[in-house]
Amino acid sequence: MSVSLGGTWNLVSNDNFEGYMVALGIDFATRKIASKLKPQKVIKQEGDAFTIQTFSTFRNYECSFKIGEEFKDVTKGLDNRTCQSVVNWIDDRLVCVQRGEKKNRGWTHWVEGDELHLELTCEDQVCKQVYKRAQ
Ligand code: YOG
Image (cartoon, rainbow, N blue to C red; front, side, top):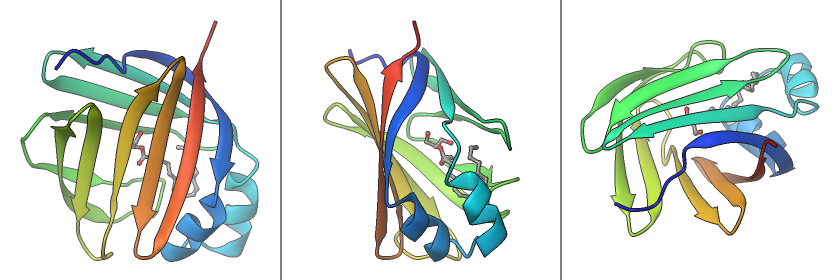
């Protein structure tokens, strides 16, 4: 796959993060803090191997996987659940299915021009985030 998501990306928009957090059962006080964050993604992509780090002033999250290989995705510091996750390329989009307690959970990353896009889904909620490359 020729698309590279690699690099350092800063959040510029975050639609319906609230709905996504409610679907995950995040408490009110934590949502108030989280909604003000401007996370940074650092993505390392070497062939089929990925590491995605999400940094913020409040909490960080890191996840490593290989395309097509199931992995145990413990969302420590987020909603603290365990998912059996798998990530595949669907056309030029990196699509993760997070199988676990929550229905219809997953995320999709893709690049559009100089932007990194991310859709986070849980149950009937979709959060749409856009990132731009850090200079
Ligand atoms: O990334 O799935 O790039 O792992 C979603 C937060 C907020 C903590 C983070 C910290 C869900 C409090 C996306 C935010 C809300 C709220 C910065 C992680 C849960 C708790 C870490 C994610 C994927 C795709 C790769």
